[in-house]
Structure formats: structure tokens, C-alpha cells
Amino acid sequence: MVPDLDGLGVVVDVFQRVTGATARDPSWYEHFHHSLLHGLPGAVLYLILTIACGTRSPRVLGLVLISYHFHLICDLAGSRGPSPLELWPIHYLAPLSHAWSFMWPHQWPLNAWPNTVFTAALILWSLGRAVRNGSSPVSIFNPHADTAVVSALRARWSRYVRPGTAG
Ligand SMILES: [Zn+2]
Image (cartoon, rainbow, N blue to C red; front, side, top):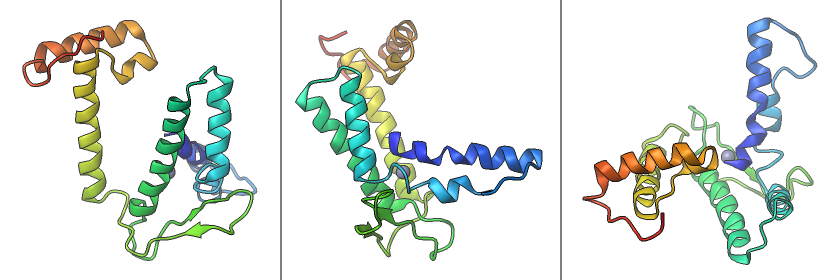
């Protein structure tokens, strides 16, 4: 999710549209999304932040880089706009340079079925992992809520997914 933080300009755009406020650049989203954090400099920045937060495990840091680049590959495959002409490139060295820019001519729309199926599969995987390992993504925000979520998931799904020894 971190690369898409460069799309938060949409909040400014909507605010300006709703309030009628004027600004020098009315489209922050189009200007900054896929330009600030969708490349190697963003990945390195995120890696530095992860290390600064205390993570030293090479395995975790490797997974950070892999997941970051997996996001970029998924965007390259399926983040097109509604029109076939609205392809969205990845400028791998942006914002430093546009030297290594990639675009896939068969890029499918953001709301196309492959993205929906993949998202549903990831949610199911995440829920199955919560039942198995005793920890859900809710644990990021609140350990007590995570315990309740895992308990509810295990009560309903443990006959399909065997809980592990952790948790
Ligand atoms: Zn993205």
C-alpha cells in the first residue's frame, strides 16, 4: 500500500472541488500519483524508514523490497483508466529521472475482473493465515481487536483451516 501514498493528493483535489477553492495546481492526484513513490527511490526510502523503525532482519527487509516491487508490477499490469488509451506507465527512477519508464500496452483497467479476483484471493489468504497463525492484519492497529477477530474467524473457519501452534 505504501507506494499509493503518492495518490493522497486526491484528498486535496476533492476538497478543492467541494469547497470551490482555487489553487495553482488543481490536480495533485494526476501530478503526483505514480510519480513520487512508484519507483526505486520510493522503495529505497521505504526500506530506510523500515530500518529506522527498528527492523534489522534481512528476511523482512527483503520482503519489503519484494512486496514493493510486486505492487509496481501489479500497477503495470492492471491500473489503466477506463479508456484503452489511459495506460499508466511506471517511471522506475521517478521522481529523480524518467530514464527507465515502462508501459505495458495490454494493461487492463483498475476495476477489471483480474484485480477483483486477485483482491478476493488475497483477502481469503489473509483470513486463512489469521486462522492458522492466530494473527490478522487487525493486529497492526489493535492487539485486543485482533484477538477478537481471530477468535471469531477460528470459531467459524477452523474446520476448513487448521489453526497452527502460534497464537
Ligand atoms: Zn500503485
